[in-house]
Length: 269
Ligand SMILES: [Mg+2]
Image 1 (cartoon, rainbow, N blue to C red):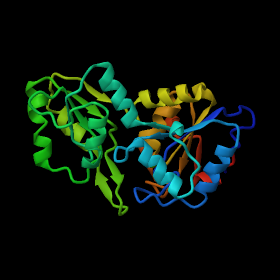
Image 2 (spheres, rainbow, N blue to C red; image 1 turned 180 degrees about the horizontal axis):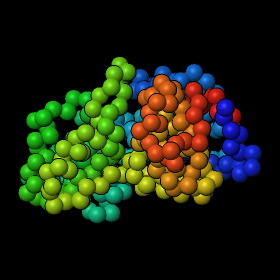
Image 3 (cartoon, rainbow, N blue to C red; image 1 turned 120 degrees about the horizontal axis):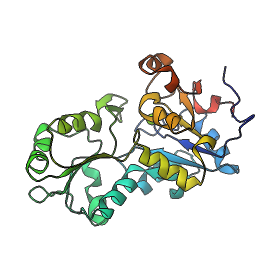
Protein backbone atom coordinates (compact mmCIF):
# COMPACT_ATOMS: atom_id res chain seq x y z
CA UNK A 1 0.00 0.00 0.00
CA UNK A 2 1.27 3.45 -0.84
CA UNK A 3 1.97 5.77 2.05
CA UNK A 4 0.46 9.23 1.81
CA UNK A 5 3.83 10.97 1.67
CA UNK A 6 2.50 14.48 1.83
CA UNK A 7 0.60 14.06 5.09
CA UNK A 8 3.22 15.04 7.66
CA UNK A 9 6.00 16.42 5.52
CA UNK A 10 4.43 18.22 2.58
CA UNK A 11 6.18 18.12 -0.75
CA UNK A 12 7.43 21.34 -2.28
CA UNK A 13 8.15 20.01 -5.73
CA UNK A 14 8.31 17.08 -8.10
CA UNK A 15 11.19 15.89 -10.24
CA UNK A 16 9.84 13.68 -12.99
CA UNK A 17 11.49 11.30 -15.41
CA UNK A 18 9.90 11.21 -18.89
CA UNK A 19 10.31 7.82 -20.55
CA UNK A 20 8.53 5.13 -18.57
CA UNK A 21 6.68 7.72 -16.46
CA UNK A 22 4.89 10.08 -18.87
CA UNK A 23 5.38 8.15 -22.10
CA UNK A 24 6.03 4.50 -22.82
CA UNK A 25 9.26 4.87 -24.78
CA UNK A 26 10.62 6.78 -27.78
CA UNK A 27 7.31 6.39 -29.61
CA UNK A 28 5.98 8.98 -27.12
CA UNK A 29 2.71 7.17 -26.49
CA UNK A 30 1.39 8.41 -23.13
CA UNK A 31 1.15 5.94 -20.29
CA UNK A 32 -2.55 5.63 -19.38
CA UNK A 33 -3.51 8.33 -16.88
CA UNK A 34 -0.23 10.20 -17.06
CA UNK A 35 -1.52 13.10 -19.21
CA UNK A 36 -4.24 13.82 -16.67
CA UNK A 37 -1.81 13.34 -13.77
CA UNK A 38 0.78 15.75 -15.19
CA UNK A 39 -1.78 18.31 -16.31
CA UNK A 40 -3.31 18.25 -12.84
CA UNK A 41 0.15 19.07 -11.45
CA UNK A 42 0.57 21.82 -14.06
CA UNK A 43 -2.74 23.36 -12.95
CA UNK A 44 -1.71 23.31 -9.30
CA UNK A 45 0.65 25.35 -7.14
CA UNK A 46 3.41 22.79 -6.57
CA UNK A 47 6.33 23.32 -8.92
CA UNK A 48 7.70 20.46 -10.96
CA UNK A 49 10.26 19.79 -13.64
CA UNK A 50 11.15 17.00 -16.00
CA UNK A 51 14.61 15.60 -15.35
CA UNK A 52 15.57 13.94 -18.56
CA UNK A 53 18.48 11.97 -19.92
CA UNK A 54 17.02 12.32 -23.43
CA UNK A 55 19.83 12.69 -25.94
CA UNK A 56 17.91 12.18 -29.17
CA UNK A 57 15.69 15.30 -29.38
CA UNK A 58 16.45 18.99 -29.15
CA UNK A 59 14.88 20.39 -25.96
CA UNK A 60 12.21 22.31 -27.88
CA UNK A 61 11.37 19.26 -30.03
CA UNK A 62 11.03 17.05 -26.98
CA UNK A 63 8.57 19.46 -25.38
CA UNK A 64 6.68 19.77 -28.71
CA UNK A 65 6.33 15.97 -28.94
CA UNK A 66 4.97 15.85 -25.40
CA UNK A 67 2.59 18.74 -26.14
CA UNK A 68 1.33 16.88 -29.20
CA UNK A 69 0.18 13.93 -27.12
CA UNK A 70 -1.55 16.19 -24.58
CA UNK A 71 0.93 17.18 -21.86
CA UNK A 72 0.73 20.84 -20.79
CA UNK A 73 4.44 21.59 -20.68
CA UNK A 74 6.74 24.46 -21.54
CA UNK A 75 10.47 24.57 -22.15
CA UNK A 76 10.99 25.97 -18.62
CA UNK A 77 9.83 22.61 -17.25
CA UNK A 78 12.72 20.69 -18.81
CA UNK A 79 16.06 20.09 -17.13
CA UNK A 80 17.89 18.02 -19.70
CA UNK A 81 21.33 16.60 -20.32
CA UNK A 82 21.91 18.52 -23.56
CA UNK A 83 21.56 21.80 -21.68
CA UNK A 84 23.98 20.59 -18.99
CA UNK A 85 26.50 19.32 -21.53
CA UNK A 86 26.47 22.66 -23.37
CA UNK A 87 27.10 24.45 -20.05
CA UNK A 88 29.93 22.06 -19.11
CA UNK A 89 31.69 22.48 -22.45
CA UNK A 90 31.23 26.27 -22.61
CA UNK A 91 32.65 26.87 -19.14
CA UNK A 92 35.77 24.92 -20.13
CA UNK A 93 35.95 26.47 -23.62
CA UNK A 94 35.85 23.05 -25.30
CA UNK A 95 34.40 23.77 -28.73
CA UNK A 96 35.89 20.96 -30.78
CA UNK A 97 34.01 17.80 -29.96
CA UNK A 98 33.47 14.35 -31.42
CA UNK A 99 29.74 13.74 -31.16
CA UNK A 100 29.00 10.00 -31.10
CA UNK A 101 25.31 10.42 -30.27
CA UNK A 102 22.34 10.70 -32.60
CA UNK A 103 23.24 12.17 -36.03
CA UNK A 104 19.93 14.07 -35.86
CA UNK A 105 21.53 16.31 -33.24
CA UNK A 106 24.69 17.19 -35.13
CA UNK A 107 23.10 20.48 -36.23
CA UNK A 108 22.15 21.21 -32.63
CA UNK A 109 25.83 21.30 -31.69
CA UNK A 110 26.66 23.52 -34.67
CA UNK A 111 23.88 25.95 -33.72
CA UNK A 112 25.22 26.05 -30.14
CA UNK A 113 28.66 27.05 -31.45
CA UNK A 114 30.49 23.71 -31.38
CA UNK A 115 32.41 21.80 -34.07
CA UNK A 116 30.85 18.35 -33.66
CA UNK A 117 32.96 16.23 -36.01
CA UNK A 118 36.43 17.11 -34.74
CA UNK A 119 38.94 14.25 -34.68
CA UNK A 120 42.57 15.44 -35.01
CA UNK A 121 41.98 18.44 -32.76
CA UNK A 122 39.17 16.96 -30.67
CA UNK A 123 38.99 18.25 -27.09
CA UNK A 124 36.05 16.19 -25.87
CA UNK A 125 34.35 12.99 -27.02
CA UNK A 126 30.63 13.32 -26.29
CA UNK A 127 28.40 10.25 -25.89
CA UNK A 128 24.64 10.03 -26.26
CA UNK A 129 22.13 7.44 -27.45
CA UNK A 130 22.79 6.42 -31.05
CA UNK A 131 21.04 3.29 -32.33
CA UNK A 132 23.13 3.40 -35.50
CA UNK A 133 26.52 3.71 -33.80
CA UNK A 134 29.03 1.31 -35.32
CA UNK A 135 32.42 0.12 -34.18
CA UNK A 136 34.01 2.20 -36.96
CA UNK A 137 32.41 5.34 -35.46
CA UNK A 138 33.76 4.50 -32.03
CA UNK A 139 37.21 3.88 -33.49
CA UNK A 140 37.35 7.59 -34.28
CA UNK A 141 37.51 8.33 -30.56
CA UNK A 142 40.63 6.24 -29.98
CA UNK A 143 43.11 8.88 -31.16
CA UNK A 144 41.54 11.73 -29.19
CA UNK A 145 41.23 9.67 -26.01
CA UNK A 146 44.55 7.83 -26.15
CA UNK A 147 46.86 10.43 -27.69
CA UNK A 148 45.28 13.85 -27.39
CA UNK A 149 44.10 13.81 -23.78
CA UNK A 150 40.50 14.45 -24.84
CA UNK A 151 37.85 14.29 -22.14
CA UNK A 152 34.99 11.83 -22.30
CA UNK A 153 31.66 13.54 -21.64
CA UNK A 154 28.78 11.11 -21.16
CA UNK A 155 25.36 12.71 -21.45
CA UNK A 156 24.29 9.74 -19.36
CA UNK A 157 25.50 6.25 -18.59
CA UNK A 158 22.35 4.17 -18.97
CA UNK A 159 23.50 0.76 -20.11
CA UNK A 160 20.36 0.24 -22.18
CA UNK A 161 17.21 2.05 -23.31
CA UNK A 162 14.00 1.20 -25.17
CA UNK A 163 14.01 2.32 -28.80
CA UNK A 164 11.16 3.46 -31.08
CA UNK A 165 9.99 -0.13 -31.43
CA UNK A 166 10.15 -0.81 -27.70
CA UNK A 167 13.27 -2.97 -28.08
CA UNK A 168 16.12 -2.94 -25.56
CA UNK A 169 19.24 -1.34 -27.05
CA UNK A 170 22.69 -0.87 -25.60
CA UNK A 171 23.16 2.70 -24.42
CA UNK A 172 25.98 5.17 -23.78
CA UNK A 173 26.88 3.49 -20.47
CA UNK A 174 28.07 0.45 -22.41
CA UNK A 175 30.25 2.55 -24.73
CA UNK A 176 31.50 4.69 -21.85
CA UNK A 177 32.67 1.58 -20.00
CA UNK A 178 34.67 0.49 -23.03
CA UNK A 179 36.23 3.93 -23.53
CA UNK A 180 37.00 4.35 -19.83
CA UNK A 181 38.88 1.05 -19.86
CA UNK A 182 41.31 2.61 -22.34
CA UNK A 183 42.71 4.71 -19.49
CA UNK A 184 43.24 7.96 -21.42
CA UNK A 185 44.56 11.11 -19.71
CA UNK A 186 41.39 13.20 -20.05
CA UNK A 187 38.57 13.49 -17.54
CA UNK A 188 35.58 11.15 -17.64
CA UNK A 189 32.46 13.15 -16.80
CA UNK A 190 28.75 12.30 -16.71
CA UNK A 191 26.18 15.09 -16.65
CA UNK A 192 22.95 13.07 -16.62
CA UNK A 193 21.37 10.74 -14.09
CA UNK A 194 22.71 9.09 -11.95
CA UNK A 195 25.28 11.88 -11.53
CA UNK A 196 24.25 14.50 -8.95
CA UNK A 197 24.72 17.45 -11.34
CA UNK A 198 21.35 17.16 -13.04
CA UNK A 199 19.49 16.62 -9.74
CA UNK A 200 21.12 19.74 -8.26
CA UNK A 201 20.25 21.75 -11.37
CA UNK A 202 16.62 20.60 -11.11
CA UNK A 203 16.39 21.48 -7.40
CA UNK A 204 17.92 24.89 -8.14
CA UNK A 205 15.40 25.45 -10.94
CA UNK A 206 12.54 24.70 -8.55
CA UNK A 207 14.15 26.54 -5.63
CA UNK A 208 13.51 23.68 -3.20
CA UNK A 209 15.48 21.53 -0.76
CA UNK A 210 15.96 17.83 -1.55
CA UNK A 211 14.01 16.77 1.56
CA UNK A 212 10.94 18.49 0.13
CA UNK A 213 11.18 16.88 -3.30
CA UNK A 214 9.73 13.68 -4.72
CA UNK A 215 11.53 12.05 -7.64
CA UNK A 216 9.31 9.87 -9.85
CA UNK A 217 10.98 7.38 -12.20
CA UNK A 218 10.69 3.96 -13.80
CA UNK A 219 14.37 3.25 -13.05
CA UNK A 220 15.17 2.70 -9.37
CA UNK A 221 18.81 1.88 -10.13
CA UNK A 222 19.90 4.64 -12.51
CA UNK A 223 17.57 7.41 -11.30
CA UNK A 224 16.32 6.88 -7.77
CA UNK A 225 19.38 5.75 -5.84
CA UNK A 226 21.04 9.14 -6.28
CA UNK A 227 17.80 11.00 -5.51
CA UNK A 228 17.34 9.01 -2.30
CA UNK A 229 20.94 9.48 -1.19
CA UNK A 230 20.59 13.23 -1.76
CA UNK A 231 17.67 13.22 0.66
CA UNK A 232 14.73 13.24 -1.74
CA UNK A 233 11.77 10.96 -1.47
CA UNK A 234 11.43 8.54 -4.33
CA UNK A 235 8.66 6.84 -6.29
CA UNK A 236 9.31 3.84 -8.54
CA UNK A 237 6.64 3.35 -11.21
CA UNK A 238 6.24 0.01 -12.96
CA UNK A 239 5.04 1.58 -16.21
CA UNK A 240 8.41 1.58 -17.98
CA UNK A 241 11.63 -0.40 -17.93
CA UNK A 242 10.61 -2.84 -15.22
CA UNK A 243 7.22 -4.59 -15.04
CA UNK A 244 7.69 -5.61 -11.39
CA UNK A 245 9.85 -4.79 -8.38
CA UNK A 246 12.28 -7.71 -8.80
CA UNK A 247 14.96 -5.23 -9.85
CA UNK A 248 15.07 -3.95 -6.27
CA UNK A 249 16.91 -7.15 -5.39
CA UNK A 250 19.96 -5.56 -7.03
CA UNK A 251 19.93 -2.71 -4.52
CA UNK A 252 20.78 -2.43 -0.84
CA UNK A 253 17.62 -2.05 1.16
CA UNK A 254 18.50 1.50 2.22
CA UNK A 255 18.40 2.46 -1.48
CA UNK A 256 14.91 1.11 -2.05
CA UNK A 257 12.31 3.69 -3.14
CA UNK A 258 9.75 5.08 -0.71
CA UNK A 259 6.88 4.23 -3.04
CA UNK A 260 6.35 1.49 -5.61
CA UNK A 261 3.25 1.80 -7.80
CA UNK A 262 2.00 0.74 -11.19
CA UNK A 263 2.01 4.19 -12.80
CA UNK A 264 2.11 7.88 -11.81
CA UNK A 265 -1.68 8.16 -11.76
CA UNK A 266 -1.75 5.51 -9.00
CA UNK A 267 0.32 7.58 -6.57
CA UNK A 268 -1.64 8.74 -3.57
CA UNK A 269 -0.04 12.19 -3.35
MG1 LIG B 1 12.80 6.43 -17.55
